[in-house]
Amino acid sequence: MAFSLYDASVANFLQTLGAVNHFLDKGLKHFHEKGIDPETIVETKLADDMWPLRNQIVSVAHHSRGALTAAKNGEFVPPKSDPGLNYAGLQALVKSAQDELAALNAADVNALEGRDVSFKVGDRVLPFTAEGFLMTFSLPNFYFHATTAYDILRSKGAPIGKRDFMGRMRMKGA
Image (cartoon, rainbow, N blue to C red; front, side, top):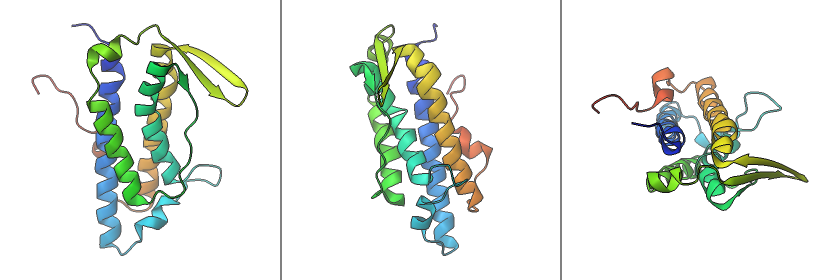
């Protein structure tokens, strides 16, 4: 069996989105048990020059479902922050991204290979092929923001570990 663009992108996005959904749930349960307002966690940063949890989760969604939309449409722009998103809104955003990606057809995603995708930021335009964009830009950004979201929750005491970040692995025979 050949390894496809769908396998390299959508399947990995879905695995990690499932993990993000799970560790957000575990974090919420922990915060409720400890009497911590989860809305304060939404604003938590690891460092002053980093984005808070809200922007990390917005970026996780944007670099997964937004990346596939860009591969179809040919243009990607940076995510927009939504200061109105609360903890429940972040959870809904992750679930929505999961649902949208799960509905994609592998053949349709694989057909995107070789298409032009431009990343536009300000006056700069960075040209990619769909597979170059997904593999060298969106996937690294996706993992960075998912890891940072995990780290923020961990730093606030959420009882999550490496297995929670790994998500459901695709094992032989499963």
